[in-house]
Image (tube, rainbow, N blue to C red):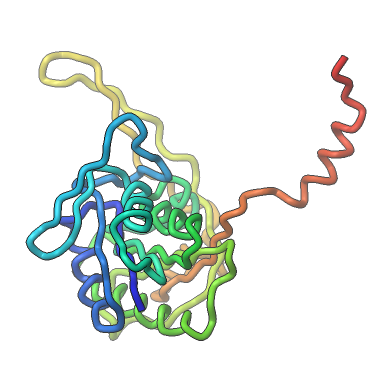
Length: 251
C-alpha cells in the first residue's frame, strides 16, 4: 500500500512525524506538508503565486502552500506511482463538530477524495500533546479495516482521539458531528506602534454534545470516527424549493 501523508500544522509538527513512523510499518509513505502552520486554512488554494518545494533531511517534502495545495501537488506531480490512500494528521487539537468546516486537516483529506482516493483525517483532542502515539495506533487499526471495507466514493473518515495513554482508551465509536455555540467575537487591540489589530476569539463551547456525537465519545474516553459526506447538497430541501420557486417568473 502507498500512502500520501499531509497535515495543516506544518511539516515540522510532532503529530505528522509520529504518524509517519506508525504508517511506515504498514505502507510506503510519502509525506508532503505545508512549510508553516496552516491551521484554519480549510480548502483554500494558492492561485496567485507559484508553489515551491523543499525536500528535508528526513525525506519530508515542504510546500509553500496550503494543505489542499500539498495534496493536489503530491498526487498530480510528486507521487509516482499514485498513492492508494490519503491520510491527514495528526492534527494538534480536535476537529469535531463545526471545526470540520475550517480545518485544513479535514480539507487535505477532502482534496484526496476529490481526486479519487479514499481519505482519512485524524486529530488529537486535548491540550496535552503527549499522546500522539495513541492517535497513530487508532489510525493504523482503521486503515487495516479499510482494506476489506472500502469507503464509499463520496465519503472520508474524520477521526478524533482523546489525548490519553493507549492503555486508558476505552475503544472506538462511530459518531455524528456535534455542534458548538457561536465563537466569541473578535477582540480589538493595538500593536506596539499603536495601530489597530484584531484577533479571533476562542472557540464556542459545545452546544450539541450528547450521546452519539464526536464530542461525547472523546469526552468519555473513546476514539471518534465520523463519516463525512463530500456532497453537501441538502437533498431533503430540493422538492420544497421546487414548489417554492415553481411560479417565479423571469419577465
